[in-house]
Image (cartoon, rainbow, N blue to C red; front, top):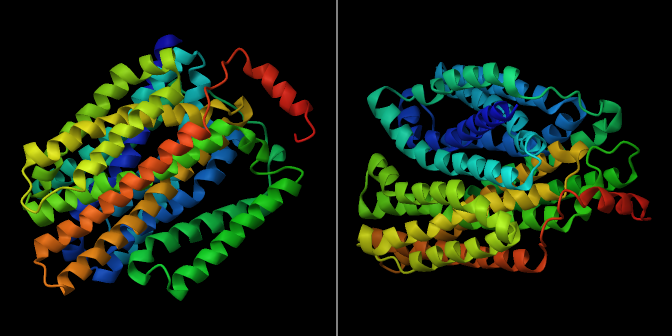
Length: 480
């Protein structure tokens, strides 16, 4: 049983790796895809957006459906859809077919990813083992983001761009085969416990529209009618969803989950952290390519120290520190490291030297190995057995929303500052560097806000042995 649980963790981690990998691997291949399939510049962004919108929009619904009909069922369905959609994407002969396949990939990723943490916390109930399992899972996510850029360049150059999608097929097939053997079968609590169709429509439409609005900000601007109008509709839909959940007899998202300070605080801290970390994940890579002159493969290799640092700390340090000092203390130790990395990058010169100006930031980014597992532990700490899929879906939703906000805010501000400097007579490299510096400064502010949330809102998770008594008290309270 013990070995099968760790095999199951490998299956869950493989899905997490595949999902993150797919998000980063495609960015390197986009020029080749544009050339072969005839995408216009305006259409090209839909290679990414068609994946992000259903992925972020369906996570919360998929997480709750996992609780209702079975988390293993949802996980298997998502992997099958993602694998088939990957084959369709690799075989695409035109822009329309590729965008449709990317949309289906997003759907599959949402169904599988939404329940991963929910399955994990039910497999590993002992705090030390759970901490180690979450650390391993977090490592695969960090590794996927870095490996994707390197692997995308290698596959596109050595073979051709369809292979960035075809590579998902063998991983998906093996994952499904192993999942059928090692993941525990769960029947769920039944659709009658939360079959709120109206709520499902409201939350899915609200999240999809909201993510669409955010990813189009760079094109339309923050104060455009397009942004303000669709943003208002999205907020209205989500507000209607919350009101519906408060009144529904069988709510899709029981609002009791929001009574946990750790669930709310961890999700808010994660949103702020990942919004800020976009500056490192994307803008540092852009600076290396557009200003310093690195190629795609060189850029990926240059960022490997950060991935190795995050992975080493996740695997060998994070769980032990969390077991001794608590996830909140570990989070509060890791966030200042990320903040320090962003502060260093605000001083990056045009002719940056890798060892002097970039490597120290790569080392400090290793603090992500403390931050990511701690956030996952805190985000799932207040969830009941029957709500584990919902808590997992909520956690993944704020992750995607945070990254989308980071894309919109930081890229828009960097581009605006670059435009101002170009208009003032600065050279291209100097103007780009000035724009990136501003984005790094905003990122530092977001990470500082995440630290404040962690300090004020979060508290040490309740030990598993004490949680049933606490839940009984909550059930007996009038607010329940």
